[in-house]
Amino acid sequence: MIVGLGSTPFLSSRSWAQEQASPTPASASEPTPTPAATPEVITSEAPLDPMAATEVYLARVPADARARSDAYFEGGYWLQLWNYLLSAVIALVLLFTRLSARLRDVAERITRFRALQTALYWCQYLLVTTLLGFPLAVYQGWYREHQYGMSNQTFAAWATEQEIGLCLGLIGGALAMMVLYAVLRRAPRTWWLWGALAAMAFLVISALIGPVFISPLFNKYTTLDDPKLRDPILSLARANGIPAENVYVVDESKQTKRISANVSGLFNTTRISLNDNLLNRCSPAEIEGVMAHEMGHYVLHHGYILIAGFSFFILLGFLFVKATFAGAVARFGSRWGLRGPVSDLAALPLFGLLFSTFFLLATPLTNTLVRTVEAEADIFGLNAARQPDGMSEAFLKLGEYRKLSPGPMEEFIFFDHPSGRSRIFMAMRWKAQQKPPPP
Image (cartoon, rainbow, N blue to C red; front, side, top):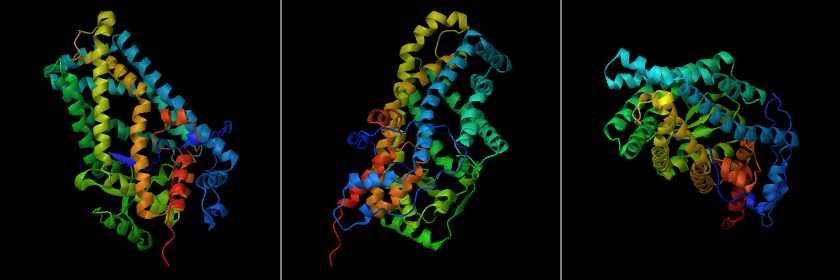
């Protein structure tokens, strides 16, 4: 389970009613850097007003950069809808043309072993849906990223990564589907419970193997050798009971201009990583604050909390499928060539459509789960590193592609991290409450 650089959930925009700049046409230029000078209101010896200090930080972002960031992030709201609608159209095409039933029949003619039938059907299904969804994937993953100046990749490099992802999906997805359909066949009444437990097991396995076997397929990991940066990070880790021996640098600058860091893995596969953009663009205070945030995820057991939380949502999603599947099959099953039970391979498009519908409706809840652990990690990072201004500077850089000042409902529905305003206000509030050191 990868937990990325994040922030605070419920505290932000409720305190302010600020009108957003209207989005302007995107530019393919570099993200606009924010001025490095620290405002006087933040360094003054007078009592710090957290709200005023937050406004000073936000005022440093030029209007055109703010408008570009807002337009990029708000466009992501629509992309969630377009991705869902496209997947729904693809599912209905597979069902109404009986293509899904024909794919099932092909798998059954090739082998009589049900597990292999499941794997063969899955491979056909994934290849067809990937081909049909490729135009939107190109727009979202490559063209739009270049349009807003976020990507460093050539199209060939991007396409190569998509091919690697497709191969992983064919192998890993086939294994997952074999297990899921074995559950569907053997427990026709309680499959939703056993299926959720199987999904939890797959989440744990992916968290274990991801940092060691999957991530290196896309990026190169090297150890951070600069003692001026490495030693404070490792000292901070030891002070908080984290058995870290190395800090890893990821060469994500070949793909993106974003800064990021993460704590990934479980048990002995856990590693603390930062990307080279963070290393090259941020000050030591910013890096220390960001890495303290990531250590918070480890110390507060957020990986396990997120696995448990998403397993619960998967359980609810399976219950939603169970409640709606039979009615859809009773009405359209004969037209689609389905045989009736949920274990019918040809019904996978319907299963996927109902399951994705649940998760679309549950978006505010799943975002709140992630946003909450990110807020906890922010507070941990502030207490551990004691770098409120360094973390605030990093939050401004995240504002190059995340909307800084959303409305309260907008943040609740669409933000899986607290907004930049929320996070900077939290840092300034923390700073205002610190007592001066004794003489």
